[in-house]
Image 1 (cartoon, rainbow, N blue to C red):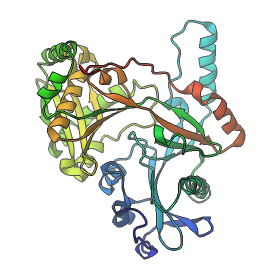
Image 2: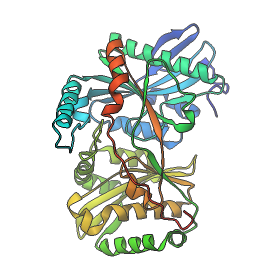
Image 3: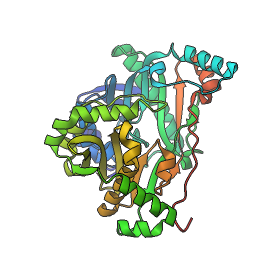
Image 4: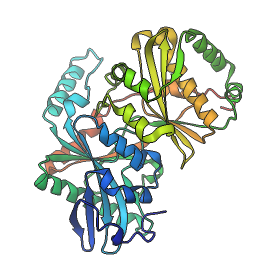
Length: 409
């Protein structure tokens, strides 16, 4: 069922939340608890399990520190026309962005210091349109009754009205706004005044076209089969176990430690997972999430997680963690990629989404990159002008060389 298909305001009258005017007959209903809107959220959700009531409830119960989600419905006086996921995040840019240079040139070092000095003053609340934990556009869900110009107009008005309301009535200091992640084909459509457009690492995915993992191995070039065999040999001490809820309770602290080893090495990070996150995911998603622990003897050295999206027949490789000190000797990460691929083939999905980061090694097992772009704005006019001038100089340059493992390439 799509938004606007006989979803009259009779369905909304008992929802607990704040209603703020947007323009004319349009208003925005704001809820801060997914439970209050559960009967409608999944009714209008078209974006699969990662935007479902079950997933968002799990996130609510184990939010990263300083992050709060809001669930908003755009309505006229007759019906709901759109659904937004907004998140407000305590934002200290100096803590989230690691600006450095490997150059020994005096000017490069000075420029890095200047940039660090500038961002050290950026400490306020950031409004995110979408879900900062996952890659993809999960913040905007419209009906088909509005054309593209109307969609962008009411999105813009809704975001500004929401920020103004939260600052005046809820004690927030929202100064910056981030809209994420738009696909390339949307580029010509997504033009919102005063926002600066930029790109970060591409989203990686593999289209599944094999009936078995042996079929996959037969489809890759000989040197990549040799690479696979070498990884399996080096990882012979790695033992994989499917985790149930009891296992997650037992190993949650170790899993969080392994996650932190990875998250602390990325160039830009807006959050840290809650230690209870996977426990809540398992409680809420049940068999739709698979979490595998990887052991050497009795020691947990890695884990990975997969979320199955039945609506789209896709697998989403979710968060993982591994012991950095033993990764090279055991080829842990590369073996995880092969296991993820094998799990996806066994599940008969159409695609496995591998998110961002580690693009080159992901491409070596067959992943392709899709460029997504983001929009950013500061609510102060002068600072926003500076953002437009210098934003791209702050975006980390993670250059990588795409690999072509398949015989047909």
